Image (cartoon, rainbow, N blue to C red):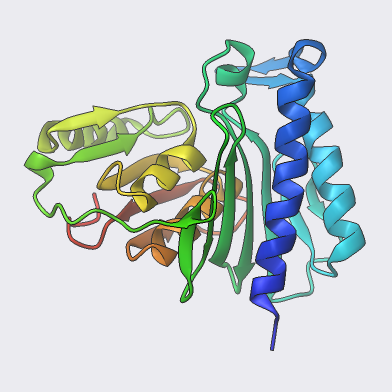
Amino acid sequence: MEDLPANLSLAEAVAAEAGAALRSNRTSWNVVEGEFGREVKIRADKQAESIILSALERASPYPILSEEAGWVRARDSEWVWAVDPLDGSVNYLRSYPHCAVSIALLHKGVPVLGVVDCFMLQERFTGLVGAGAWLNGDPIRVSEIADPAAGILQTGVPSRASAESFKAFEERLRAWRKVRMIGSAATALAYVAAGRAEAYRESGSMIWDVAAGCALVKAAGGEFRLDGESLEQPLEAAASNARAQIPK
């Protein structure tokens, strides 16, 4: 039996270390090192990833799938760490506060625990499915709002999506009272877990973008859906407070 509380504590400590480094080194790490279409890679991505991978490799035997490095260690375990060292790189670059360190543990491809450290706002969300979710140590729960017309949808522009996905995206926007696009999938999902929004939906997300946030939502009483061919491919990701229907 895996010691999931110990793994959550490890993920929290590692995320806190990386988040503190991102905050304190923002001036020197805020350098663009690559642009790929609408995606931007900055020095901070690699620096934060180095901190996280080093810590996880020392303390845990599980393979790691990280945004920058890809797979670390052989993929021969049911347990996998999914790491986004800096979710919201452009936000970080432009001093927009919605960015986060995101670390999740997957079991057979399903997120079971997650940490989303919103280091600029000093909000650290942690969650373990079946045990609960917390913000800076205080319990959090999803909201009670069931009607989308009274709720908030967190989403993002589907940069990797098809024309059909864009059409569905436009239709989805009309169903909700308010729509928020904050540029960090991990943060958006954490806000659903904390009851600040009712649902999340995005096309073209990668597992490291959404795994920790999905675990948070589930741990806080909500539900999520991840559809994709493999952990390395873009996903259709959705979550809700389990009162409102998961957005299609």
